[in-house]
Amino acid sequence: MTAAPPADAPREPVIGVVGAGFHATTNILPALGLAGVPLAALATRSEAGSRAALARFGSDGAAYDSVEALLAHPGLDGVIVVAQPADQLAITHRAVAAGVPVFVDKPLGLTAAEARTVARAADESGAGVQVGFMKRHAPVYRQLRTLIADGSLGTVRSFSVQFGCDSTPFCRTEAEFVTLAAIHLIDLARFLFGEVATVHAVNSGAGAHVALSVTLGFASGVAGTLELTGLPSRATEVESVRVLGDTGFAETTDARTLRLHRTAAAPADLVPPVAPAAPAATASATPATAAAPPAAGPAWGTLAEADVVLHPAESAMSGIGRDLHLRGFVGELRAFADAVAAGTLSPDGAWDNVATMDLCDRILASSAANRAARPTADDVAALVPLVFGEPGAFRDEMVARIRSGRKTGSSTLAAAYPLTGTPVPQVGERRVLVDSDGRPAAVVEYLEVTETTLVAITPELARHESSSVDAWRAAHRDYFETLTDPIRAHLADPTWTLTDETPVIATVFRAIPL
Image (cartoon, rainbow, N blue to C red; front, side, top):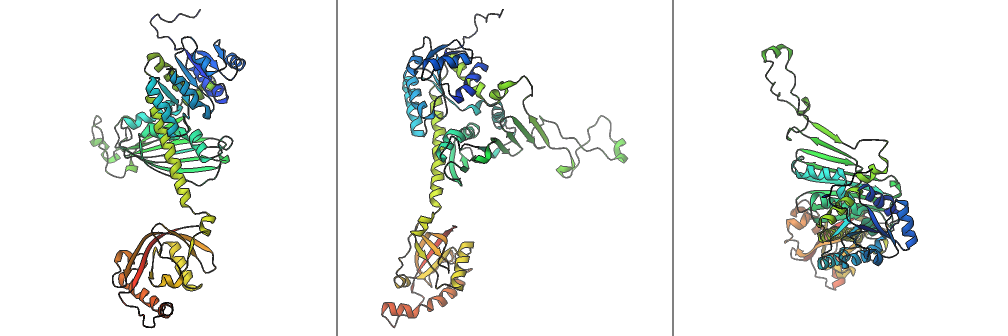
């Protein structure tokens, strides 16, 4: 006979679940059982489907065919929502409006704006919200967070995250990959390092194939990178985090192993460094009870470094429990049940989710901006051509210098623009650099456009083309003199002459490779 729980033991809350799809039946419902939380009720699109799912998990809970019926379950303390991403927002709104604490799997809203509607509704009703970012409850990441917080690594400076999976079967776009798959690692970065001040993201993939590189700068001063890939080559999922501090670093592997490396400068709470043995000729001079002083010399001459590897025990009895515990599913559901029972779940969880969704939005916006900055073939075809002289050696040299970065500016007589029928460039404008074969060689984006003269050119402008102002003047005076006859003919002025005061348009640009 099973012993009855003590009279003063807290009762398990009455928890209902919405959804019995693949994720719910593979992870959430099994983890709920491992967390020791009874499944009081379940709602799917049909009562028969709900009853079958309850039977599968050995529950005698109530079966319902709608969210509304579930929310009316007698004594309901909280609800877990594991539905399709497009449905979760509306279902959570219903739970919050009814004042029922809710655990909802990510994503809660597909944008920060959508997530904010739930947060405001939760504020109004007072209903608590927890979003299913299970990595926050994974033992490896909780231990890593402790190492960061307690100074075990010294001052944390940077980190790198690698995550890859084959998301192509369920993510058709970059946005779906970010909000349905990579969002866990994006949220984990906030969980470990706080709020993000700057974002720069580049996706070298296209469509369902995503290869996203993200650089984050945090308000705390920490900087880090996220390598997030959704490609068929990642059929075996990979996940790792490395955090570097002044006196040590820590790295995780696939949310199961944590390696901590410490230097001799770190507090001596790991294996202490061993002093080198005294030379045989002098060993007798040192009392047996005295510690040999550390010898001066290179760090590699002693055992001064220490590594500790933490990992779970392996057992044939682990079953699915090991995976669900280590990935954080059991911990997040136990935390939800405990908060519901204690009455401590608040709308703050919904606002925390808004911050994660806002970071997702910023990553996608940065990626889109950088994608737009890379000119397409159609973009290039629509640009004004930029040519240097006639096809041949001179033009080839100019193209080569621009593509190599040796030439980042150009200076042209103001009178030459109407001569060629080309407008004076504007800051921010792009033109296509054309080689001697008439092919696009690069895209040039103008950063500065200044009207000056041969005598007034500044060192700052000249250095974009020449080693000095004198070298710039000599080269350009010689070239501009070759334009005398064409300019006189264009102006119908046989007296036009190049002088030190002749207007010159000096530009500064950057070359965008094609």
